[in-house]
Each structure stands twice: as C-alpha cells, then as structure tokens.
Length: 401
Image (cartoon, rainbow, N blue to C red; front, side, top):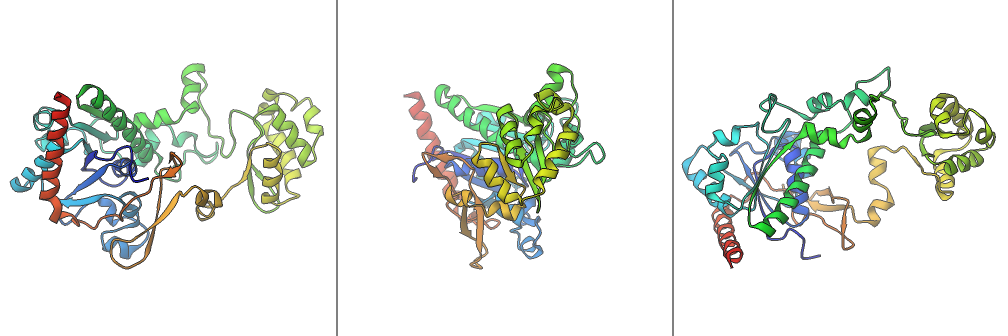
C-alpha cells in the first residue's frame, strides 16, 4: 500500500533506548515521517546496546536496529544557538514532539509548554516517563525493571518459591510505547476536529498496571490479591503448561466442553465424572491432583502430536517454543510479519525487522528504509526544516478556511 494512514504526519523524536523509539517505530509503520534528533557524536543510547560487540562499536547495536528502521537521524546540540534555531524551525513544522526525559528536563532546556505553544500551537507534545510529569515520584529515574517491581508485576511472576521474577522482556517499556502511540493517534484526530494541539503525559507505571488486567482488577473489585502461579492460569483448570513425551505443552481447557473433550482424547474419561473435577470451581481447587493425572496421560505422546489432535477438536493447545522456533512459524511468513532490509553500514548483511502485527486492508506495514546511521541525514536538515514549516503553514491556512 503506497498510502498509509499517517502519511504527511511529521514526528520530531528526542527519545532514547526503547519506550519512545518503540512508539515512534509504530507511528513510522503507519506512515509518519520520523526525525530522530540525536546528540552529536553520541546519539541514541541503544546504538551501543545488544549482544554483538562489533555492532555496538559501530553505533548500530541490535537494540537500536530493532526499533529505528524507517526513521531519519539528524544531530543537533540543543545547547548551541545555531542548532537550536534549526530545531525550532523543525518544531514549528512538526505535528508531534516525542520525548522521554525525566519530568521537567524539557522545560529546563527552554521548551516548556508556553514556549512550545508560541512556536507551534498545533503541536502534540508527548512525554513518556517512568512515573508521569507530576506527583512525588515524577523526577525519579526509572528503567523497565524498576517499573516491573513497583507495578507488582514481578510479585506475580514465577511461583510461590521463585517469585518475584522479572518478566523476560522489557514489557513496561513496550506497553508505555504502545500507549503513547495510541494516545498520539487519538490526539491527531482531536486536532483534525478542533485545530488544537495536545499535551500527553504517559506514565509507564500506570500503563503497566493497566496492562496487568485481571491481576489488578480482581484485587480492586473482589479484594483478592493475586499470587504467583508459575505456568498456571488462575482463572480456570486445567489451564497451564503440561508435560508430554518430549516437551512442554500449553493447554487452556477453560470451558466445560473443552475439559470433557480433553479428557476423552487423552484417555482419561473418568475425570469428567469424578466428583472432584466435575465442576469448574472444584477443578480450580484441586488443580494439582488434576494436573498430575493429565501429565501422566499426556506423557504418552509428543507435544506436536497432542497439539494437532487437541486443536483439531477445538481444545486450545500449543507447544511452548523458543524465540527462534517462534520466529520460524509458517503463520508469521503467511502474514508478512517479518521483512528483510539491508543493514545501514553497507555490509550487505540482511536485517530482519518486524511489522506491528496489524494488517491494514489486508497488508502488513513494514519499514521503507533501514535504520539510520548517526547523523545520516544531517545534510537534509535545512531542507527538512523548510519543508516541514511550509507544510504546517498550509495546514494552518486550510484550518482557517
């Protein structure tokens, strides 16, 4: 698809590492033109992060490459008057300013709300921080793991013996980035209707608690605090990870009919009429006994065979895969979820990147260009600033008309 929903939307991105770049990556996939404003000679901290030391030394660490395809990089020193003038010309033409400094830093740089309104009253300014721009913790430093702990997420990850455990990927960063992208999209629609810009204040702590769903709402509404249950699902039984002849298998027989079919297929039909397990609440209360019986039956066949049998019968079941196995699934290839670009260092090495997982009119949006080298588009900065300003002047005129 040549036309994307956010074509002609201009995003000035001051963010580093993950939450902010993940947000602007999704805006880019939807068509936005994203300019990364990076500190001269240093750039995004993620340029030096990842498992490949050579890429890190080259300033294109794997952590950077994963989130920054399709963007442009311009180096600007916002303490230098000439660079500030260029930045402000870009700011005047931007639709979105995205930043993830600590609360108050943008204002101390001279770009508080009044100044942003003076430069560009139609601007949508989105700030992503650990705790939000206000409150007693607003200026505290925060990384993903800090938020995982403070949100209660770690307390429900693992088992009673192993918790608290960190979730195995930076879930609070990605949740914060997605929430920011959603809010920016809504603010763009609001501006289309009203002509007014917006100030968006994204708290990773709050977006993480919101994303925890039932673990939080069950306590808020019913007064029942969640407990770590390892690979088991608290809402139903049998629902969790089970042992097969060659590896783990997830089964979620959350409905009565699914439980009955499961028992029939694995050769334990007596469990259906067993008074301990006949009803949902009884199965939850005697989960360990039920799981033991099912594990014995499931150990007779390999996981892939059970997956095929149970899925065909309408019982949700699937193997537990490694990340390499997960990425190799034919389902992902069918949907165009993974694309290959060229690495920006000119090595000719293929760079796999991911879509958002959303098909738009049947198409997966993918980046149009590789991630940028640091300052790769410095030579374009004056042209970019002029073009953005011209586009914004036209938009203002259209709004007045």
